[in-house]
Length: 134
Image 1 (cartoon, rainbow, N blue to C red):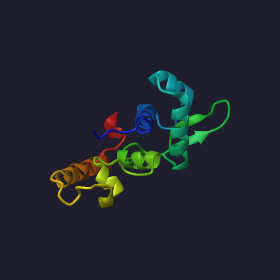
Image 2: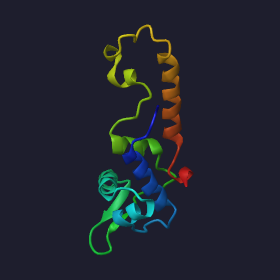
Image 3: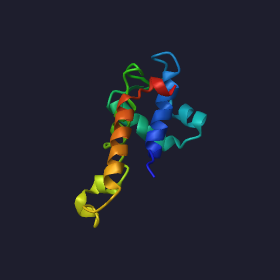
């Protein structure tokens, strides 16, 4: 079954939380982890990745934390997934590993329909913004 990783889920949860508040408001990884009952260490790593990509701004110090780096209306879910995972999630293994990974690749009767589902998901994630998940 197609499934987003926990890292992507936690990243989207954090971005949604930030988008629900005034732009520039700062949140710590600890308070976000506590608020949503997610592992702090994993969330902190995800937020660091998003900060390196400019999706969020990171501020050091006593009043430090993370704030949105751009308008949530312009931030797509696909971009967030790609930053966190460094690749698009695929619905079928043969699309990830290639034809050599599958002994029935040429005769497979579900490869093309699954390919259509994959394209539709890619289009959906390319169009869906963080603002739309608020």
